[in-house]
Structures are given as structure tokens and as C-alpha cells.
Amino acid sequence: MKKILIFLVLFFGFITNINAEVKRITSGNENAKITIIAYESLTCSHCANFHKDVYPQLKKDYIDTGLVKLEFRHFPLDIAAFNAAKISQCKQEKSLEILESLYSNQQAWIKGSTIEEVNENLKKFLINRGFNINYEDCINNKEIEDFVLNDRIEGTKNFKVNATPTIIINNEKFEKTLNYKNLKKTLEKLI
Image (cartoon, rainbow, N blue to C red):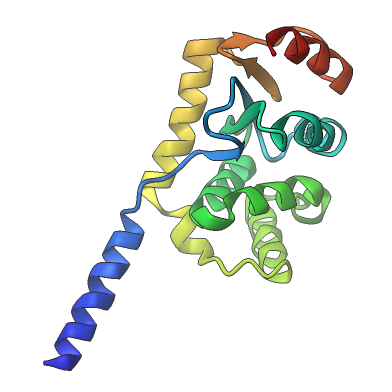
């Protein structure tokens, strides 16, 4: 009886884990006055530059102080970005950490002349970084795949996104050159 009970707990725990709702990757206070949506592609060098040059100061001045919530939304520009987006969504409690690591080390995993080579480099990168992820399960998860594709569809439909990164602040497309100075000017007007 005890073995059956343990089996049921493990089985239903496993089922619950597989069917857990895919959650948006966010940084900051859920109830912040300002919401920034960043449509990004994990193979986009401009997106990696945003994470390197703009995001740290934005995080320090606005996100960590509770004024801004940043939502990362997927807008994959190629199959490598699509696979990396699925990976970033796969381990919910580590999603932000994985996303940040993929951007800050983009050149370490993005190399290869075929998608198979890029996938292999992505797998190796995740192992070397200590992210305990079942790569094949993540890549083949239909719920995560739909979630990523829906981000792209909604971005195009709702905000006319056609390039990355595209920044949306309180449902208004940010049309200025994306740097911290311009972002700060816009945010200060909303506070």
C-alpha cells in the first residue's frame, strides 16, 4: 500500500509538473506603476546589447526600487532563437537566470553553420552553466512552443513588432533610439 501511495504521489506530481502553466518571465514588482514589455530574440545581438548596456541600470534605478515591472516576451527571428526561447521557459523557477545567461554569453552558444550545430552548442552551454534541463523535453514541449509562438503573434498584432528589441511602455511603443538616457526620460514622465 505504501509503495502504491508513493507511486501515485510521484506520478501525479510529475503530471502536474508537466502541465504546469507556462509563466511570463518578469523582473520587478508585479504591481508596479509602469510595465515595460521587451520583445526580444535570443539570437539578436541588439537584444544582447540591451541586456548588457541598458538593463543593469534600468534594473538598479527602476525595477529594484519597485517602480517598473519588466516582462520579457519572445519574438524569435530564427529557429535557433525559437529553441533558446523554449529552453528559457522550460524551468520556470530559473527562467530569468537562464534568459540572462543566454544573452550575456550569446557568442558561446550561437555558433554553428547548421541548426544542429547551434542546438548542440546550446546543449553544451546549458550543461557547462549547470542548468539541469532535459533539452529534448523542453524543445518538444507543445505548451511552451505555443506560448513562445503566441508571444510573437501578439507582438505583431497588438504592437506592430517587426524587429528586436522592441520596447512597449504601458502599452505604448517606445519609438526613440533604445538607450538608457532615452528610456529614463520616458520613464521619469510616467512616475
